[in-house]
Image (cartoon, rainbow, N blue to C red; front, side):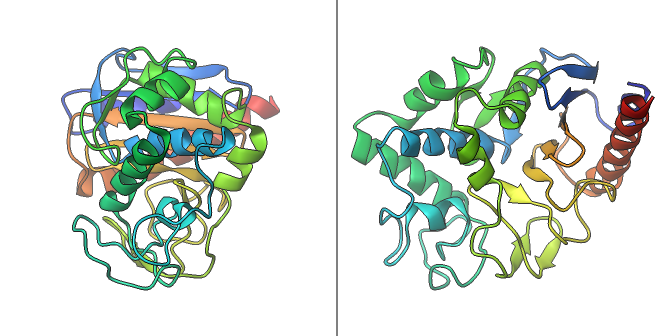
Length: 275
């Protein structure tokens, strides 16, 4: 895909991108697909998927109490538990504000380990990574932000999100719909959003502006970006996903570079599909 050549202009030392169709086919790549990058918060997509699998298998239930008083697994996945970003401090009543919380995701992992009697990292590896052939992906720290992966591995994950075979399609559909609709909150790097839509571990574009995806991305687009300079989005209306990894932390460069890439990918995909 010619649109992917845009990464050659990024002010980074190394970058890799891939575009994946809804049938799992890789439509285009650029950069070293096997180079390992820190994922930062894109890790949350992997960890959330493991929690969703545990729910399917009966180890947890969405409405199980977890975290602060009155909060549940559902609240924690949707960043609506009221927990602070990084401190074990409650900032709001559960379900009232979208407070983006690393500690909330870590609490989910701890809750799984306590109730299932299995280390969360082992479950993530055995339940999600190994079945998808994500052999270069690992969790080296927090389940919220400690992942390391490659464009090739994340392409496999993006294919799973569009055509699930590990998780049930109904689970993915539920996880990528807005949970606790209408609540406001801060999207890191982009300020307060009204509303700040989120699913079960997956950020949903909705009406957010500005946003790290493209102007052409549908409101139903879901995914995540990471402060390490990484992103993964799936646009179910366009029927395509895009993975982007770089070795420079998120900043003004990324806010300026990512949306044009996404728009160019969507335009090229539409033109090719209609040819």
